[in-house]
Image (cartoon, rainbow, N blue to C red; front, side, top):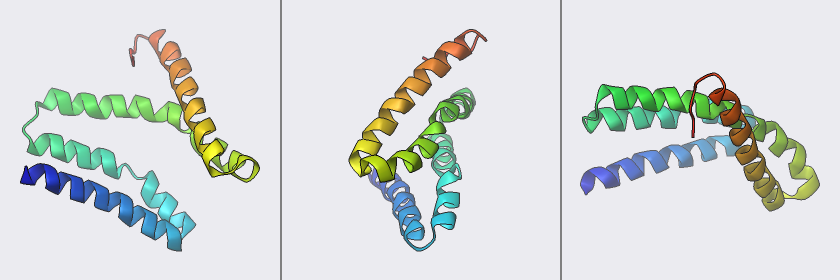
Length: 116
């Protein structure tokens, strides 16, 4: 149980750290948030918990493919925020991301990459 609590605290600490940096510097906060810190931390957790290398490698592989259709959210969010307000923008961004992911998954399926 102590291990799970440690994982929660370290992972949550990263989110708090990034949000605190972002309060002070938009650019630095954005840069740190764009780093694959959570993915790297997840890979470390999987490794430390003795997961098979294949599982760890698959996690990295699928993370790559899942990131691509989520990228439009950042442009959409910054465009919609002054027009719709925070919560409507958040909702629209989530819906747009789900649609982008679905379309991307269909496209990738034609190349033999199954994401769903």
